Structures are given as structure tokens and as C-alpha cells.
Length: 332
Image (cartoon, rainbow, N blue to C red; front, side):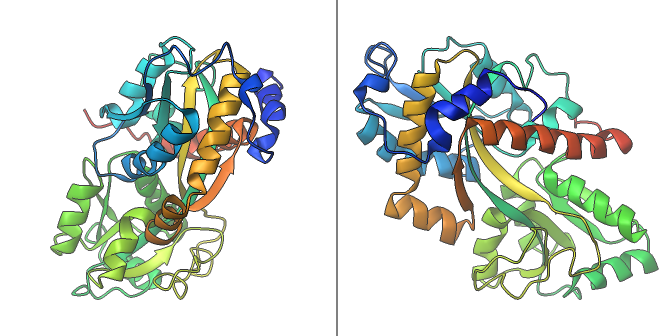
């Protein structure tokens, strides 16, 4: 992991969240009694995948914690604005921030007012989903090889939409372009909604985003999948026949969107254990599990603090290097 700290101790306390739900004795001074409503902070607009994850577990958490649980959308700066605010809040278990994969890229893209690794306590790696490249049915591309051949024949003419500069989709296509020796044109948007709207209208040649974003349009036959960037193919009907990057001739490239939860630094281990166990149980609820795994194609991991910390450090290393090597700057 690169650091043997109390974070590992936390992981030991909750046993990677694989044990039974802790009883009242595990709470810190009767938590959550007395802290007011529990806030799930979503640092993105309503309607996105992070918002969907938080709202799917909201009711289950409320029932298990015996406290009011509310979801608050606080968008801005690719998720870093609200995440920074949470990092400065008291470590009393009242506030939890749900983050997306931009959390690992932001330190390389922005001057953050907080330390990503030190000012937040890892709670849970909820799950991952492969990034998927798709195209409008009117376009001539059916494989990644088609896209790359067109890009090689006419450099800078084939476009791909992403949810923004520095997004994992953008960085993935930068690596694809470099490995294939082609020049593709990035068209950044401020979120999945605007990017998808233009992809559905055929205004861009391709779009790359998480399976959570792309899959509903594959289901509706509004888009055609070109490639997926997980280590292996997703088993869903819409993606099971779609080659991975490795199968498409781009080796050693894995790109997974991910969702995680953090708390303010120094939040007591017992509180994190209780919240994490109840979050894990809420993710296992039939409706939440079905919506996340089937509709959004999220591989639910429910991995504990130590696993999340290790995963985050690796993502920061891999994608931060892509940002620095290509001098990618955040949109102003």
C-alpha cells in the first residue's frame, strides 16, 4: 500500500466488512444518536451515476442506522469542491462523501485545498464498471480497429466525446491513441448528460463513458458498442460479445469507472465500521443490488477501507502519470 497506518488498522477492525453487522456496542458514544441527520454528499449533479448509487442505499441506511439520512448534491470542480468541504468537517459521522473515479485524477489536474490521501478516511470501495466506447448506428465504426484505422487515415477527424477533460474516459482514449499511433479528437462535455445527448444526435463519432452511462443506450439500441476496457468482458447481454481493449490489439490497458465513500479525517474507526457494515447490507438489498448490477453494470465489491486506500493510491499513480506526461490541464 505504500503506507502502514491507522487506515490498515481500520481495515482490520471491520474485517473488510465481511463479518456480521456490529451491534450497538461498536458505536462511538451512541452514534448516530445526537449528530442530527446523516448526510450523503454527492459532489455531482442529480441524475448521474454517483447520485443514483447514493439514492439507492439511502433508505436502507436510514432503516439500519435508525436516523434520518439525506442525499445532498453539491456539484463543482469535478467533484473536488464538495469533497474538500467534507474534508474540513468535524469527524463526527454526520457527513459522508460519495466519489467517482475523478477523485483519483483531480490531484494531478487541480490545485486542491486538501490532501486526497491524508484529509479523508476511506470507508468503502462500492464497485467498479468498465469504460465502454460506443458509436451512433449511423456511423461506420463497428470495432475499435475501425475507429483507429479511420483515425490513421485522416488524423484529427475522428471524434470522441467524454464527460470532461481529465475524465477517465478522456485519459483512456489518450492512451489508446498513443499505443495505436493515431490522432483522435477529444470533445469534452460537462457531464454525461450533455455528452450523451450529442452522441445520440450523431454530432460526435464515438462516446466513451462508464458502462453505467452507456448501457441504457445499448439496451435501447440507440448506440452500438465498439470496445470495453475492463480486464474481461462484462457478462450482460449488451456487452458479452464486445471485445476488450486487449482483444482489440491494445494490450495492458484497463480502465474502470469506480465509486467510493470517504469520511472526514479522524472519524473514529468504530463509526466507520458501523456505517460501512450498514452500507454493505444496504447494497445487498434486492432493489439496490439489481439496479446497480443489471442496469448500471456495476460490479459490486463492497470492499473496506484498506482496499479502498490501496485502490485509490494505484489509480492516482496510473492516471496521474497520463495527465502529467501529456500536460493535460483542467478546463477553466
